[in-house]
Length: 186
Image (cartoon, rainbow, N blue to C red; front, side, top):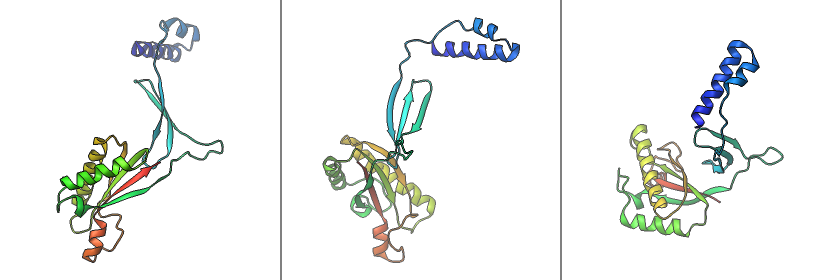
């Protein structure tokens, strides 16, 4: 019904454009859209900022939620968990060990965040493309565990070797760089 109504409106606009006559455009609009359901809501982006959302299933609208002073409304987000990849994954793998899954389930069940962003990181030993895929796959594996216990995951990111926290020149530095960060949005 909505599509036929929109086609009628489009025909009316075309009639005005062609004839320049508003009266002929009004005569071509024959139906009115009624009983449309709109689902307003709030969407939280990966950085924790809110956006007002309106969607009728055919077309959507989104605008940033701001205060009266025009400042975006953002929820506090901070790194609430850093899991060393060596404790969760075998070398060059993204399947989580059984002990790692149990540890993650316990973490997500006890954390009191509204939502989570999960970011995977690697050391610099492999190619950039390989590290990007591996970090993303590992972050997705952690997100899957989070979702299995009902945690809301709003974003999953893979950074590869691009955001080191230590030097990749030593084995201890590389170990610190192989990690999955869990960012809690409160």
